Image (cartoon, rainbow, N blue to C red; front, side, top):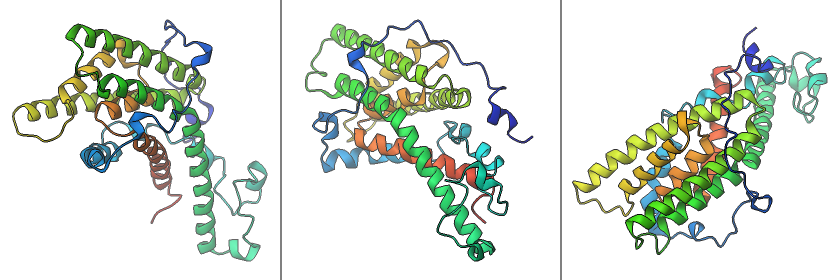
Length: 292
C-alpha cells in the first residue's frame, strides 16, 4: 500500500487552471537557442562572478522542495523493476529489470545483485534525466534568453524608467506564455505537475529573500559584483505578481533567477539535469536501493 497514491495518481492535489493566457503563435514553438546567442558567450571573469550563485542553486540544502518528486522511482521500485531474485519481474520490464550481461551464477551472489541494481538504477536515472531535459530544457532556455535580454543587453541600462517598466511588462507576458506552455505539457501528469509548482514556489521564495539581502548588502558595502540585485529583486517580485497564487513552474522560476543573477545559459541547463539526477538518487537512498 506504500506509495499507492503516487502509482495510481488518484489522490494528487488539484492542479490549478492556467488557461486564460495568450497562446504563442505556432511558429514560436520553444527550441534551444543557437550557439551564438550572447548569453552563451562568457569569459573567465563572468564565470568567476557567477560561480557562487551557481553553487547555491545547485546546493541540495536549498529549501525549494526538491524532494517533492522523484520521477516515479517509488512506483518503479514497488513494481519490482529493481528486484532480481524474482524472475517474474523480468516480464514486467525486460529492458530495465535485469542485466543482460550477468550470468545466473553472478546474479546469485549478493555482491553481483547490488552491482546489477546499481546498473539498473543508473539506466533509470539516465532515462529520467534525458526525458526531463527533452521536455523542460527548451522552456528554461527561452525563459533565460528573454530575461537575459531584458537585463543584460547593451541598451538595457540606458533606457528610461518608463521604458524599463514597459520592457518588464513585455518580459512578464513572455514568461507567462512560456509558463503556460509548460503547464499544458505537464498537466496530464498530476504528481509531476504538482511537484514542479511546489519547487517553483519554493525557489521563488528563496530567490526573493536572497536578492533582497544582497541588494541591502551591496548598497551598504564596497561589493565588487556587477549584478544589480535590486533590479533582479524587482523582476522576481513582478514575476510573483504576474501569476496569482504562485502558479509558477520550476523551469520558469529557475530560468529567470539564473538570468537575472548572470548565470550563463549552458550552466543553468546543466544544473537542470544535475538536479533531476540528484533527486532520483536521493529517493533511491531513501528506498534503500543503494547506499549502506
